[in-house]
Image (tube, rainbow, N blue to C red; front, side, top):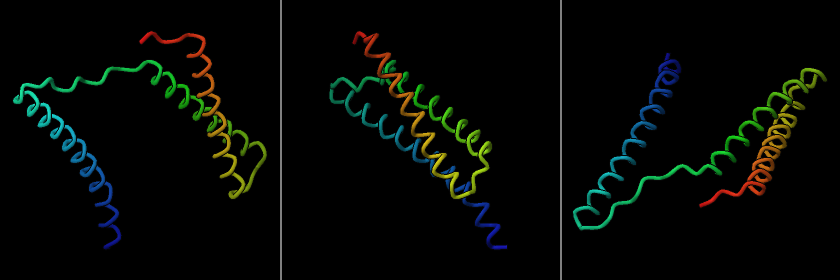
Length: 115
């Protein structure tokens, strides 16, 4: 019975902890900006979107997803054992994620962003 209660409280505790951490960060940023305004300073500007970073992250995640898909197809087609699958999953995800990062680099080198 005690294991069931602990298993129930783990996701609740993690969710509450994540919420409180995000709320605390936002609260402290607001307090810092208000203190800067009171002292006559210019508060920090909000972050602007970086298109090259977005492209890099997007292509990396697309590559990692394709790597996971290819690893599943590879392990199913060759009927690999459980211990052999782990290496294939990590290798394929890293390889295709790296290909995504390489594609982002090649695109950015060909089309520089004016900043």
